[in-house]
Length: 204
Image (cartoon, rainbow, N blue to C red; front, top):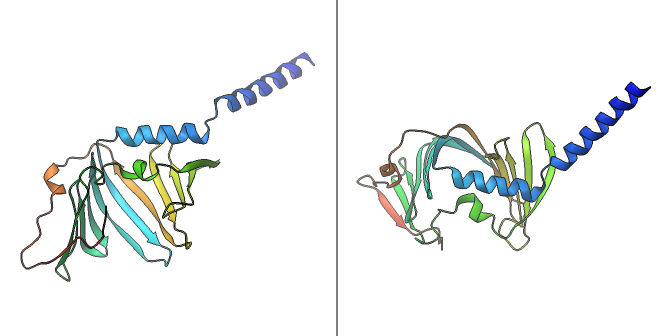
């Protein structure tokens, strides 16, 4: 009888300890921000799918602060490059390149962390995929954003939904946190005989 009581007590204490050490949504969000700010560079594969079902994917490189290079494999050939000053979107088939001047103070350096500023956060019940956070702010262009983080609090996939219920989802795979890269890849040289469209996105 004493042995049974001891085992029961141990189980109760284990359950209580598990609850005491469980992380809140704010704790996980803080760890997520810390992880993202610690990333100096990375590479991998990004895929995103529109609500319509259309899918885009490509190999990406990232270097802090705010430098991104994506060479798309689907649709093949398109290239997106951005730094804190400019963003280029090049289509070799049409020989058109959109060139967007960015706000140098904002640029894209804040990344997803800055994008989530002023959102409230709730924790979705934990699953085998990791931590799932849902960010909400009805005043934003995307009132609902869901992110799935792995055990190291790095983002693995997510979805963004706008006020009309449209949006897109994305996944990151094959991530390498110590890739070889040079900063010059984030300064795109527009090929000759290319039509340039200046500031089409009105990013300010």
